[in-house]
Length: 232
Image (tube, rainbow, N blue to C red; front, side):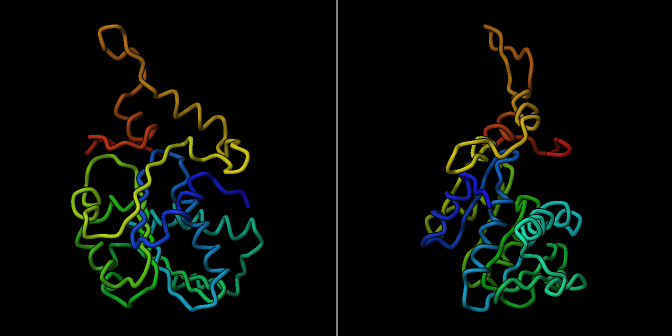
């Protein structure tokens, strides 16, 4: 299994912190590396734990974190139909149970407690929904998002009263942590970099997309509420 530079940063950020906040641009491996971390922790652990993986809706779950999670299991030979309850959307991995559900499921939001929480694309859920999840989580909480604009992570969660690590990542963090070789296809790298803005001497933009590059290229907070970019 290959690990990105971001995976190593996540491993370091987990030490002593309840929240691991993953703000990043497109294809920085935020979701993939967090899924890898959960899988490795589950295989190493001797304790029974419940992990909740949550996204805005079931379609978001299926085409995002669930796809990454099961891709890793299958590629590494860890997957077994016997441990996959597709009806309940759970998977038994070692002594851990990983459950997948959407934030629009009110019964799940206010349901049983868990040990670990991973909220994928957390900027798509409300602060109230997150609060219901957070107060029922005993240990670690992972949150990842593209920083399209400021939201509750910046205004409410990241404050001196909370124990958190903040990681800002870009596609340049999606490289092998040992060799530095890109783990992304060259076509994806070129697609991201093609949006980098080029300015004339007077500061007028000649090509590219300044806001897109800021958010999806550099992983910095933008001001793109209401702007939709497909497939990123």
